Figure 1 (tube, helix red, strand yellow):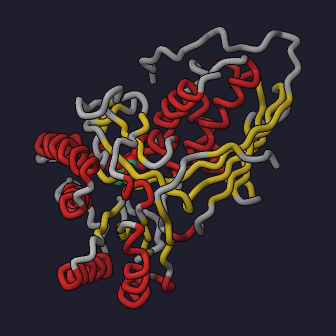
Figure 2 (cartoon, helix red, strand yellow):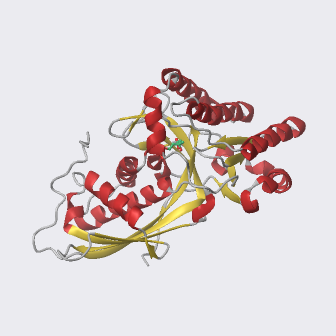
Figure 3 (cartoon, protein in one colour):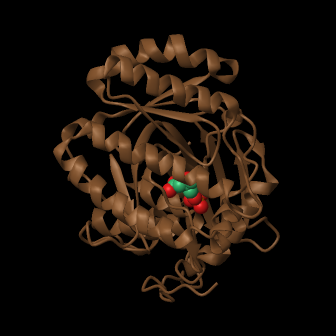
Length: 365
Ligand code: PMV
């Protein structure tokens, strides 16, 4: 893949005799999209702009140790939660080759990478956003340590977001606190298709919003995101969808400033159901919701109609239900979730999460 980037820097190479050995580690969170990215163009360019809450509890820790590459040693030695993971290692190798024009020094080093997630591996929570952003942040730290570059935080996170995007589109949004926006839109100054930007011009209630994830099924996704995005190329509603996403983003930007929760919920639920509707009418068609997903949605809507509490849902590309509500309703929502939604969850698993402060550098192991 040719990268249309101003980040290609052939000068970021080590001198012949330069001895290097160092460590870095980052914790980076998952995110949940309010306006969904579904459909992309070559080069990992989104067909519409998206906006997400950065989470806090669901995160990946990635520890990277690097030194001069030795011919006989493995280029990348990767362990996930203490055990070798050849499938992930192969993905990382592919990713490193893709970004070799941006970080030419990667090919001069060998790496020991260890990673772990805060959420159970078999919870059905996607880890690509948290893991790709944690790794990209670590690579930017290595660039900075070796070449003295990326010294302004703004430049650092912009590049980390750019690199994350190449690994997994939605990961580009995880590098910012509270909310991230990715994709060009005239509603958000500085927005780009190449990297996400921080988005915090919102009513304060959104900075502490809750997102409790009801694990309806912990099974592995039946459609990968790569295959899912590709289905949009032949989806008969694709054009209408991109217009709808644009209109929804426009409305949401306004609503999040005013703090109008009713409108917020309407847009966010519309986005979730549209994502699934698009999958249902793709060829081949996928139904990722389970009967219990619909039961959760029904109970949330009934509870809201009865109590007027601003409790909403959104969905990722899977069956699990993300329950969104503001901090003032935390007690009421917790009781509702415990009595009415937990019994629908596989093994009673509900992952309690909240909008968070973004990634952080952690102590190297
Ligand atoms: O980043 P990807 O390629 O895994 O795509 C993510 C797509 C959704 O999670 C369904 C929506 C989104 O914007 O996060």
